[in-house]
Length: 160
Ligand SMILES: CC(C)(COP(=O)(O)OP(=O)(O)OC[C@H]1O[C@@H](n2cnc3c(N)ncnc32)[C@H](O)[C@@H]1OP(=O)(O)O)[C@@H](O)C(=O)NCCC(=O)NCCS
Image 1: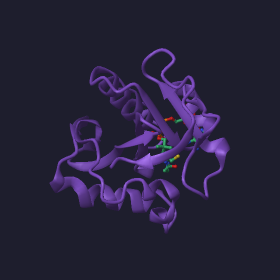
Image 2 (image 1 turned 120 degrees about the horizontal axis):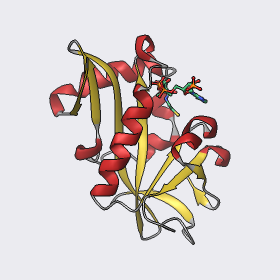
Image 3 (image 1 turned 180 degrees about the vertical axis):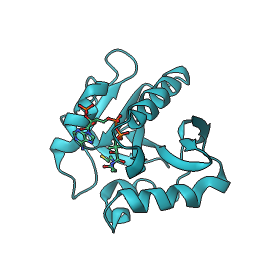
Image 4 (image 1 turned 45 degrees about the vertical axis):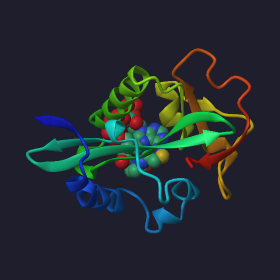
């Protein structure tokens, strides 16, 4: 049975090991990591799924800004290869987005595959620029409040 919990500081290295397993080496060179350096993640939204004590999947979020507008940066999200395709990734994404909405976050963005994230309502964000090098086609957003991305343009910056 899958058990969901928020990630605690004691879970950090287990989640890092899962990310190392699921992503190509050098993941920390990705531009999204520039926005995470020295910034605490949004603890209430970093979720961990365990089965029989072992980490099966995890999702983390960081706070960012686009101009003066606050936003959540979704990711990384990863599911252990033995659990992929069982719906766990979708569950982690939908559950954390519901919590984000309940906490009053207006908007979310990520860098990822549109065919996967499109099923959760994410769409390409025109004019919102992640630090280079990022393929603009992969910069996707979701409004948690109606119209929350309307008229929001510019570079994504780390939370001060
Ligand atoms: C992406 C990931 C988190 C999805 O988790 P998961 O638990 O396997 O996903 P789910 O079971 O909820 O959904 C599986 C569906 O998503 C599809 N899918 C998974 N990754 C996809 C991708 N990159 N692009 C398009 N579709 C994708 C699967 O084909 C499957 O489709 P189906 O429902 O039509 O059969 C997981 O595969 C993973 O950890 N991958 C490696 C790390 C990674 O790429 N993270 C995302 C960074 S953008």
